[in-house]
Length: 568
Image (cartoon, rainbow, N blue to C red):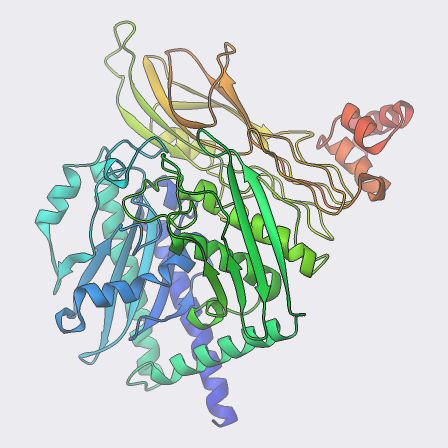
């Protein structure tokens, strides 16, 4: 290959990344669900004609993108190449051939150039409701969790399947949102297709074979080169988390070899009776993401750069759930996989892995309805409101953890203003939670407080999807643990960290989301950083005294200067 062609292929590679980013942004702009518009709970990618992912959008979540990397071959196999035509659009929410649960809709569109199939565009979005019991962990099998859409054609040669649309509308609580999201998914794929064809015509390409080989070869080679530079070795990691009705133990053995890294989850807890189980495709997505962040973060994500990261797990363990296991909240367990892997990686590559963080998203869904304990006003309505929130991330070997930031999912916290527009819900409080970040040389990120209620005339059920209630984030290298999750009603009524729970008219739910853990011993923390934390309200006087040994006179001086506007 000449240097000129290498440069040209690099330009095309960058162009493909920009194409799929535009694809993702089109989905953000046109989606109906706030989880997509405001939180970015989506993914977008372009694939070659064999179904291998060539590029992914920066916008989106690794759970979607890395799981979706395995999805397109399922579509090719199910639909059949002989049945693929220009104008087709394919759809599924199959948890095992999509991205892990029924609440994710994956749409795949074949891309034809001058009558020849040259590749595919795919995208995924989390939708607010798919029917069944609603978004939560209470189901006993996947059949209770909502409407199942097998891999099929949403549009055949440009003609939308109206029967499928009618079935969808008749089985979900928010039909306009869901159908609108499906059209948004199809439209963003079409935008990606148009930009791809523009690129192919500009560079006089008849197919994607050349650029595909260039991307996959160089990505795989660069990833293996990074792995080969690491010392070979084996280590184990373990984490204990809340589970649903009993704690869950995640175990992993990490094997670093010359050309691959294996994450083996043998010894992990078996299937749960409730919907926190994880299909292997989702386990693989977050295991690969964790290692790629630590070892090869700057190598673009595609089929070849993911391939050297291998995953094994016993069938019907909680991280390799087989059909028909309930999997609606697979993220609550799946988001803990990176920290489990980092527990092992820290023993092989010191000063590489961060301390544990909140891990799973702090999600809840509010199902509102007119009050039933007394006559409801005429304006009272039924509504489903899903909100994504985050605890703090763990401190890093050289930096504090990030406050109220979702790692590993990358999903954004949803603004109060957007949440309150989609239903009669009121967010009374949403602010950072002082003292929730674990003390250390580097402090864990802060969690947050939230208080939620309903507008006058409404009662509601809340589906809690939390963890870290009984098992807070653990520090690393002497760092202290983060604060745990708490949840209860404003009258003192206790509530569970998971499950659908009734909240009477006039009551609020009071939540405190977990903080990330610290890294390194608190005695090593720079005094200037402690002063800034105290002055900024990240820690209280009591925390500064108890965890960092600061004396009261110094505390009073810092707080007095902070009130006068002095910066630290």
